[in-house]
Image (cartoon, rainbow, N blue to C red):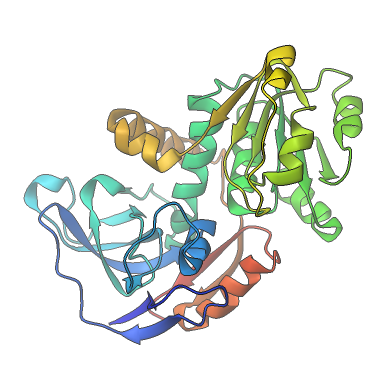
Length: 326
């Protein structure tokens, strides 16, 4: 079968190749899935560079997240041959067939095709865990979402709007502002550069933001400490800027805000009952048409380099979805 393999880590994808490998043997607690669609996430790119916190031994099959059809499953797994499933593991999704732990899969909601199902799980579970599970998002609150053109940032906007929050989205690319606005209609879209606190203050009528959702880090995090309302929360999602920020602890003390670390996958693994509840809530929101993932492009797996390079070059507004069977 075809699989995208990271044979060595490198900064230029030179160690990543689409190759033929044997079909994986199903683990005792795994479900064997015919992959119909698999979405690209930022950790997939980082793992090709050896720069993600999880560093699998090489060679490994890339890909966190997939949607497909069950072709083999243990009797006690809750899945049967022919079931449509979505979910994934830390690796293995970018292949024609994947062996995935049953706990990492859920049934695809009715009426959802494979491509949006593959784009739904990781981004929305991250957004839901951060905004609702950890920060108790309430209707009417102001939410500042950074990295708003990425899959996680767009999911956070979509989810926050669906819950009745007021959203300020930021991007580092002027040309993306109109696309972000047209997708989910946040209350404002601004550039995350310089002293953007003044814009946030003006938009919120001086209230600042109850929650700041930050996958970017670096200078954006530094300025975000000035944008959090008293008793608000600043959620650390990632560091796509490349710089892990420092914070003087007198700032959250004086302003009375909390810094919340977010690892949605680890949260679900440590608290599986909460992870299942989050997945069920996301499925319900999707079934009711309240959320819908944004997909920038759908590509055959043979065009994997285009997707990875588009992500690395910050060209995307939404998710890249690969179709291994094409």
